[in-house]
Length: 481
Image (tube, rainbow, N blue to C red; front, side, top):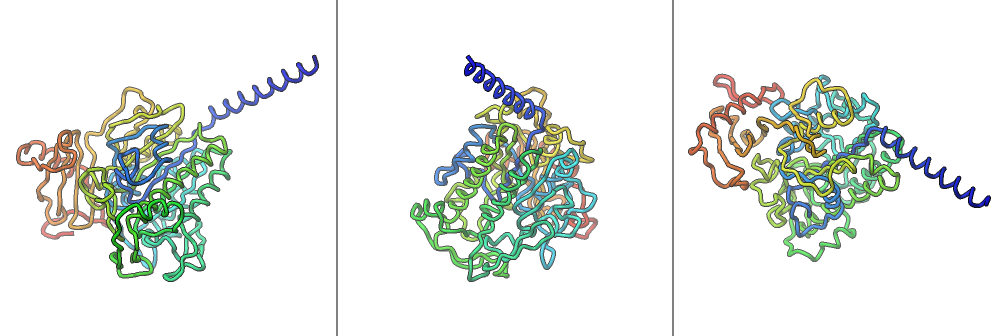
């Protein structure tokens, strides 16, 4: 009889502890993990139609969450896309609109006046950490990640430095972490692996607090490089290979130059699979610590696939059949793989064609976490879409600009897509028009058939763009900026 009583008491205590844990989880704000790939194409993942590269863990996110088919990056290149993400503003308004280099290291910093959603999360008690590539302001400047809402940063502050996978140094907050044994002739410390360890440690260190973990990984950004590990061996003999030789990007071989690659396709595929494995490690860490059910995971890429260093997006169909690559404002340059997993909230295996973009992340996370409303945003919360509710607000249009190669602008307005090239040379440069409902690959310019639509797109471009003295775009009078 005593034994029965003891068993009943133990079962009851276990039940109480379980209920208490569930109640605590229900009260605790959700953790947020945002994984941002670098130069990963819309078609580089299995769940988006990739057949040559193995991505089981990211595919698992799609199986267990919502996969978006019409979500867009901030723009078609690194720094301004990240600025649009963090500030909740499209590139006609956001502070950083191009990859403007600062010597000897770093990029144009976000100003003191710029507010990020990390700061808003920080204000309601979230522990915040960023691990990977920053590119929005060197240590000690107004754009230092520690001044923009992150309690901890580890990785490449300068995106120019991130061209190398075996760099001479990384940054931990204000500390320069020298990687002895890394130079042009030695490859001792593989930076993504070091950064990954720090990201996993952040989860462990903050398991008892609500946290926002930002992982702007450098994978699979050029240069093509990595250890000859199990990921590389998977593809080593899978593709016909032509060795890539040469620098190909920038004159500084220690920073901007790309080394020779004996098997560029195998190397690129390995980099994507290695990224996928790192996502798997994050999932395992959350599972191990009992955090998965109360953690939102968001996965995206900063822009379309690159062609530097021997990368071959055509071979892999990295743009997923869409026109364009990195630096293009056609769909292949800006449409991003976008996946959200939130157990018990977002329906597993769901697919959404909701039209959204990076500047929507800020209001969405603010609504989820009850953080203060931002001072400004171009975004709209897509929480109704995530939760399968009615009442989702829609953008009248989405807008992008790109400041290199003569300047480019693009507008998505429902089924219509307008693209303007050489926009810096003339505010009257022609606008190409595509009907994405019938021509998603943007093959047929039908501007001459719909002048009324072209007028609407031109008006949207004029409305969306606000001049920025640091990143000037339009001309004034006869002077071209």
